[in-house]
Image 1 (tube, rainbow, N blue to C red):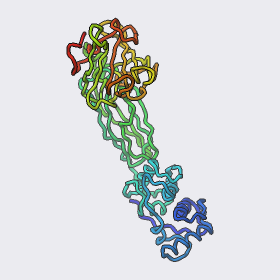
Image 2 (image 1 turned 30 degrees about the horizontal axis):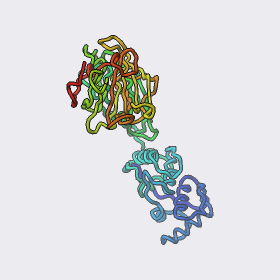
Image 3 (image 1 turned 120 degrees about the vertical axis):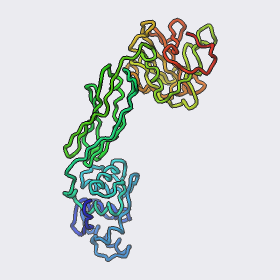
Image 4 (image 1 turned 135 degrees about the vertical axis):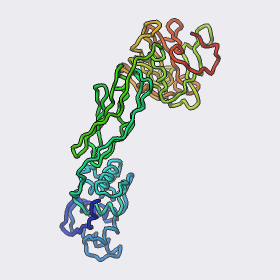
Length: 413
């Protein structure tokens, strides 16, 4: 821990960030005639004397060890006042690069924790008496900085077994160092992606890496998932987080089209309204998926393809909807399939013409349009058609096993 410094003495003609911070405190106490200019002028001397008289101190007009505890106040994330502004002036002495606006937000909180860690004091983001003394007492970090980087990674990947093409993978973990991080990079299959790191951060959560798209592009073969990081000491390290093999899916349409990933966040896939052709009334060449608590459940693309239609809720009875054309052919008909996802809660997360991969987020289950409750209307058609007709309709149940909770007789091949 850095040695606890003495409170600095400031007096007429002193200048700098310490003076700006003092002036913020004085203005916050109601001494509005004091300028906030970093110059200890006669107005500042007068205000200090008046405040010393108010709190029972000798009226010297100078700051000393007895003065500071009487005027400082705690600051933490969410503080919006002159004390917060004083803290920002002082943190910037140590290279924090903060906007000095008196709004002590996430960046100020991170800078505070970084400062506290480097000084070897409790790193809680709260600027209390001890942190104030270090902020006022030092003009730069002391020379007792660590000489050896402790750059480390704790992490893991959740890998399904077996692992097939297009299967989503979850990445978790934390990169940390006693120095500030400057870069964190993940790589897999010859491709890499970098995540920007807050210049005051000494740890980085790997789950923030946008790796889902990369994983969904993998072909068959063996892979290493690696993470490398560099910190401000110049130290760079690389770790193999996991080694895994991607294999070819078995000859089963449920894997070819990845239906088990439509609702990747849940194990429930329940049909509330089945597939009905024109021989049964009412016509329903689709299936509706619903269960208690389904509202807001993420909907993922079951296969690679192209978004060919996106509609907002007020233009069709389908509500917010997406139509996806699959890249692969229907294993039975050898034709491309168009898949409709209807009644989404919000405007879809994808745009018309965009490419998607197995596991791409499309939107969330809702009840927009002509709907009696939260559910996903899922329809499939051959020949690039958007119309729900008997001639080009496909029963989605061909592609994945589900629990049916309606009239079993309505299920037709």
